[in-house]
Image (cartoon, rainbow, N blue to C red; front, side):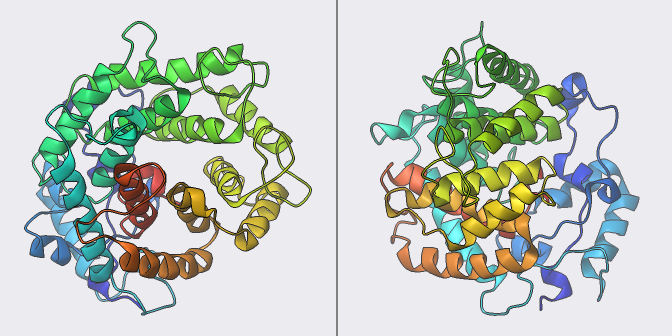
Length: 391
């Protein structure tokens, strides 16, 4: 069981901070308050203070001194009936253990970024998708992205991602993989970063996704905006980006969501898993993507989700795409149930702690930047700072 200081309740509105650029572009009239968003748990403020930085919910001075007192009472009360528990049902791993691994990985990413905002490894370090996931892993840790220890890294990365965007079409990079993960970054950064470019860029990126879907005969996505075929991996990246954009207050047509779900259901096999382009040859990574899409669509009580998660629990991870699998599987297990995620999380923390390199990176098929970012994001559910990581 966690202590009161390890299980804190904080406002989603305070987390987002709703800076001036959000007020200019966000379509929602009011921020989500803590009761509307639901309880969220995170590492203790005490742990962040030891690192010399405050988590984003400590910046609630913008919401007024009274809010600070109220949140403090929640954070340090002996019992919080509203708060979810971190590491439910087990004491084998601790927040400090996870944080040591996580910070070591972030420090590697910060040190290895070049001034242009990308990473120097070839060919993947310059891809907007890899840059974006590295930046999302920094936002997920909860340090202030405007003034915290990774502020410069995030600013450089944002500049780089925006330079890869076609100003006419909104297309980011050279593939829809790049575009989907980059849109996810823009959505999670929107409302946290004080940058007037974010709102318009995110809206353009979302329009590119939805317009590409309209032109696609499968109402889904493949490698380019003009593709006339579709697969579950590229489509998963677009669907998660759309959910993140919707969370940020950007208008996303419900028809786009429903048609995307329909494509996934067509790719669900009799075993419950998800195939690549059709309902054949399911594997763990694609099934994790399918589970996450259904969960974010509020379909966790559906038969499709039950069958998919049952398949995922017994599906072996793909050694060739280990970090890619972990990135999605961690979110799928987290969305399924606290007990399922707790068991997965214990194993994942121990495995990643034992395989992390001395410089803080992880090895993998797509290079150390992607492998490190994806590994960190599989641990980021322990913090739950990002809206996309809410149950």
